[in-house]
Image 1 (cartoon, rainbow, N blue to C red):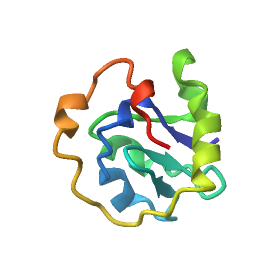
Image 2: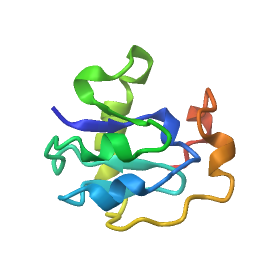
Image 3: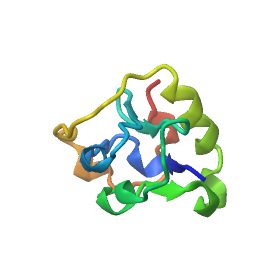
Image 4: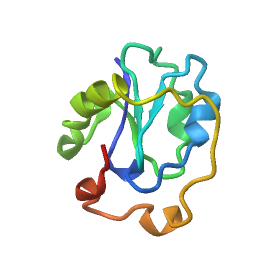
Amino acid sequence: MTYVVTENCIRCKYTDCVDVCPVDAFREGPNFLVIDPDECIDCTLCVSECPAEAIYAEDDLPVDQQDFVALNAELSKVWPVIIERKAPPSDADNWKGAPNKREHLEK
């Protein structure tokens, strides 16, 4: 089982999770993070660190977030590794918990 970044991360892109990942499994896009499923060791450390509550175990994904398994796998192959925390976007708190953010995902 791997962990998956879901819709709640879009436009928030807090990177607290990156700091605790022991295997550098996170990849950074313009306004979203993903987890490389080939690197993730299922340690769970990132889950509690995410202020947007955007990270789930693959087996625990809400039904409406299932497509993020494939999206994380796809984007992790093209986005660069991120290994340290960065400041979130200036409007991140405005987007935290906002519904229907998929249309804002920048690839």
